[in-house]
Image 1 (cartoon, rainbow, N blue to C red):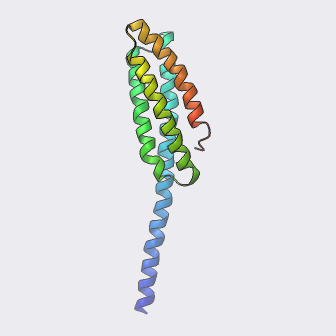
Image 2: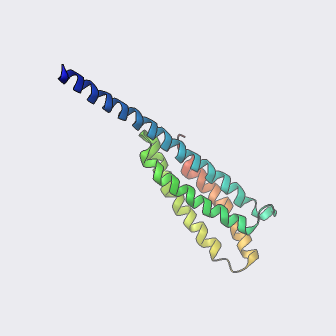
Image 3: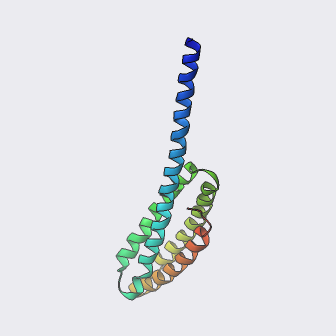
Length: 139
């Protein structure tokens, strides 16, 4: 009888941990997908620079936030389950490379007007890169 009770306790513990794992994968996917969505929001902010609706400082803040969002995706994607984990990881790696190129082009601008033009081009480049990288991610 004790053996049966012990077996049921072990089974219950394993069942509870398996349920928690699914929830964890679901939470990781949600966090990674939220970060992906925020990247799109930040790109919209950057694209607003040439219209005067956004200052260069706000564009810099948006670029920094995109970096944080990419870090969030990198941390959460491996915890997600199935194809979404692979899709998020691949998209994140691709977009991270693009972001670095954009940061390099913006920081090499020699003047304020040059920086504004670089940020304008960066917004368009990031929008295209975002679409290319994250279009097939099933969030």
